[in-house]
Image (cartoon, rainbow, N blue to C red; front, side):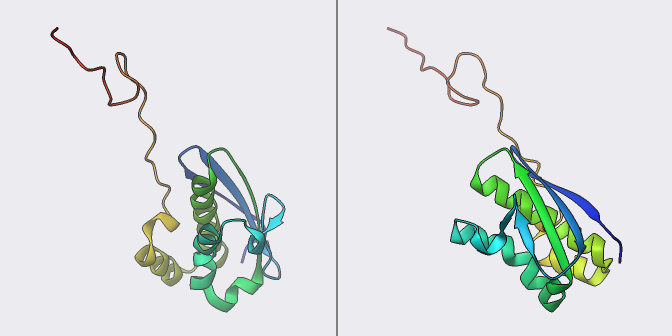
Length: 133
């Protein structure tokens, strides 16, 4: 087991940096405990990697700093950073396979981005209507 492990998770415009170290099971997001995360559905999503890990989650502390994007993007970025940190810390291939089978985005950043706006329209795909009269 290593000392401090830095991992990064990204989703849309959000970037999360997680430092995983030996500890007592405390997980902080921008200095706030994960249990106090404001939106319940997103809090449950954040807790998924820890639930899969089980009792071993009490052996590590994770400090996450996240910025950019919105609530859901930040949550997904944090979730990926947490999972990557857990895998690197424990160096457990079986655990990595379990994460992959549960949800691939736990370990792989979602690379989908917003398309750029094009000329003659209000967005990436929408165009002004053509009129013949």
